[in-house]
Image (cartoon, rainbow, N blue to C red; front, side, top):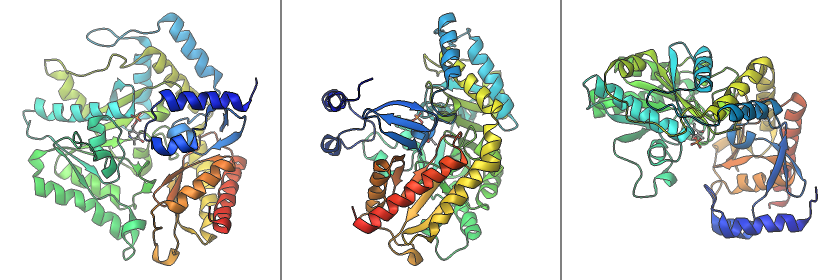
Length: 455
Ligand SMILES: *Cc1c(COP(=O)(O)O)cnc(C)c1O
């Protein structure tokens, strides 16, 4: 295969003239030109100039089994030859969707035994809003409709999911946030609580939920949505006092707990689901990304017996669904993906070996003058920079330093992403201890370059 600059220039020209990117400043992009990713294998991606990069982000937090899995390709091809598509609306179904639903019921926490399929995390969160509100409507409590979410949460980009999201930039359009979604504090101990222990702060932040419930009246609230670890918000891990208190409050006021596991699901935290890692008992779950390791788009809402019983026992149609809900080819990809994770014991590997290795290797960066905080769990982490570590000071502009380090990481062959003053990491779960060493080495090198040259 030829790798001449003209090929890259051709694609970059097509990109400039015909392609609009998600979450991208197109003015900036026009000056910098996109990197064209052409192929991938294992934990590495390759651009159109043949440069190899270690993918510290598993695509977009999703390629859990790594790239180049022929088995998934074959399973999808087999499925597509046999039945490329049939819908699951009304009273038809397909074997692939059923086998996937059954498989998921064996992996998700106790009580989550029903699955409603969608195509993306955003759609699954829309579905969960509808499931939660329908549940209360069917119980004759339609006024129980308010949804509580958290600041800095990321729940997706459809109008409803963007409204659930707790990032101001995503609400900067008249349609968002939709009515009836309110946000409370998120447990960002490093940024918000220098003067408190993590445990004190965790308890206090969880009680923001109780305060909001009392303010609005429990009789008006349908559900609380939260990620076990906030991902796109900067891999924010709650103090250990947080989740038990959240669970207590949801039980006390009879509020559905919706756990968005789009990133934390499928082994990322060293258990199948973040709910298991943190001892959370969800009423609804949001699954996507690692469900198929990104090989094809598919997502699911995990539904507890409590919610399913109500929705399944009342006459009348649940007025919701997507043409491709339970798409057979995507379901086949997800099934094979899960089979690989089980056979290779990837979840155990992250929990016992590579997760702790990754966290320890990153924590050693705390000896660096610019590294103020390292946090994470399993194979997701955030390294936060500070110009004055003792005060946990932020850079001005926020993220200026992190963006420079991110650019050096790319130049040194490492993919990462800047969030505020931090860099986030979520490598494929197949990463080896040697490759973790490579990742941290490239990060430290990039950090030292920026410190030495300031660009
Ligand atoms: C990525 C993400 C979503 C949205 O998923 P899409 O497939 O991009 O719609 C929802 N929730 C969380 C926690 C995510 O990380």
